[in-house]
Length: 193
Image (cartoon, rainbow, N blue to C red; front, side, top):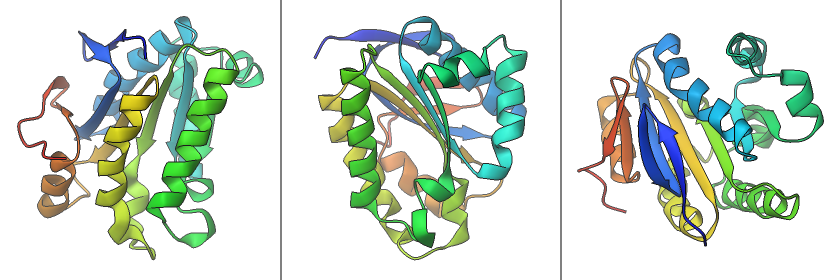
């Protein structure tokens, strides 16, 4: 797999990347992800955003305000804004293997469609609903490290610091090689698998 670079938090890093992003606010989150998304669209990357459906309108407004043509990028298939309810927790449950397969199939089809790489941002707030299968979250997060090694992709898993417990944050840190904290990205010293 050919290595490429990705800019995150003003740093240029070699892709592929699996990143946990911890944010205190939506404004802090968008300060990080908007340049990441915009750069991807400018570079012929497929860009996937997964968040709760009630957040789609606000999300698209942020994208448009940063100069991203929503209509054009959705129409040409380069941008997808997906609902957590139709991905992570389709049918009211989470299944690590099902979500892994969905993501892997998306990566394969994106390559076939001619995109150079895939960039994805997933808001993990769905995990706070304690739906059946949520206990498989860390298994899923750990499995993504193998996925990014075999596909041209960079993934940011977004966690709201004000909503997730310290215990969950500690577990999340163990599964991501990179971490975003206070608007800066670093290699994660807590990464285990």
